[in-house]
Image (cartoon, rainbow, N blue to C red; front, side, top):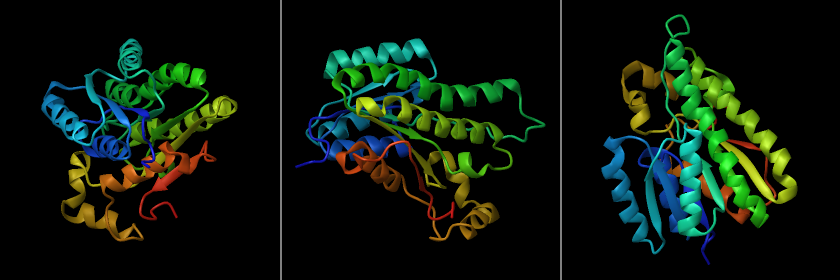
Length: 251
């Protein structure tokens, strides 16, 4: 029996990287998948992912929409409910970084990071809790970051957004626990994706590696495995927690 057989999962920002790995992992365990992407340049990858997921014997749909837009999230969730009939799992994965020292950071750079990384979590959670409360069941998984716990020079906006996710996660867990809705966060460390290509470049990458007890960067599939745990009944007594999937960087 697959861990998520017959469940419906929504994943934001899933055309590539960690989001795509999560969508595939949940699908492998029987979940039907609805995921979002935001740019025209990701359309081809999104459609390829839909095809790959459907080959696993579950349904999948890709939606070009912006999780940072409240109205767009409302439209997206209503469409998923109409097509799939339920939402059992919500993975708030959409995120960007606009790294800059605070002295050089513009208000526009700050706002776009906060909107994409933090406001999107509010937008999606606000929408999915309605059907989850009706079903008296659900798992919400928010993608934070080890940077939201430790901070990092040049990433104040990213760190603030990811730290905000942690506070939001704990609050929602308290609000919705009585309705059997769980809310947890994952704080990945340095994971090899398109977004972190710089990790393999010269001295900067070596400096990061020296701080990781396991001595390597993470893989997207490893974050997907952690997500699967939180999405499934294996974590039925886990809520309000932050799991640091960081190779020991947070010790």
